[in-house]
Image (cartoon, rainbow, N blue to C red; front, side, top):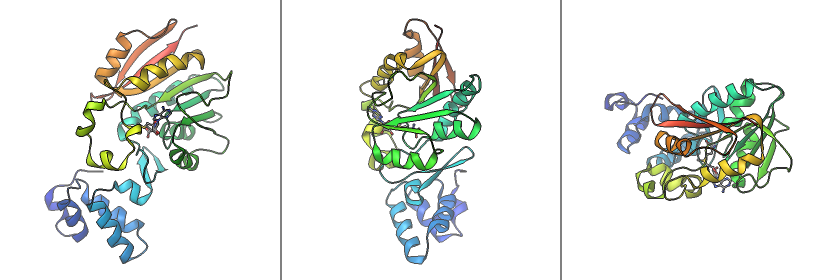
Length: 263
Ligand SMILES: C[S@@+](CC[C@H](N)C(=O)[O-])C[C@H]1O[C@@H](n2cnc3c(N)ncnc32)[C@H](O)[C@@H]1O
């Protein structure tokens, strides 16, 4: 979406109302709500809910992610455009392997797994998350046959399974930064999907340890976080027999920490 200027919204009363309520993409959001509403009454209700702060993606039940349109819904984390960096990194790592098995951990509605499935054929795909509402939506975004596992961390995965690629966007916002998040995130996404402890790294550090049991030799663990966190995590060194690297996105702020198992 293109950030709107004040003039963009003047001819459209709904866009004007949304803009006055603080929506920076008012014109596009007005069009989305019109497209989604089945009549004038529902449109009024949707506009009122958006103006009161509900994420537009929760209201219309979908979000664009690259070329994909993914199902989302109230109460779950909405995939961010910055995670396209991880999606591209995971697709490249998947293409480098023969008969790849791929896991998206902390999957939410599974944008990374859905991107891999759309780009690479014959992938043995699995996802895991602690939130069953998110997994119900993930099921709609993923091909039939995907292994969908409910539980914390990697605990619910089938034993003795090895993956060629494990990709994850764990919650990585430091607890003290909660107030800096958008109002949409603070009020409409679960805290458990956002916060990662005092430095934001609780889930990330636990995943790096747990993934050793699940990663094939030559396989890659790819984790999104912010650039400073990634440099800190990689500087700290991965587990024994792992090479590590940081891929930084064009925004300079989003990074993927990459750990490759060498033996
Ligand atoms: C930041 S969201 C990312 C979701 C998805 N990967 C995306 O980019 O849209 C983090 C996800 O981790 C899940 N989660 C939080 N704590 C968890 C835990 N201990 N075990 C498994 N999943 C967890 C949340 O339910 C949420 O769906």
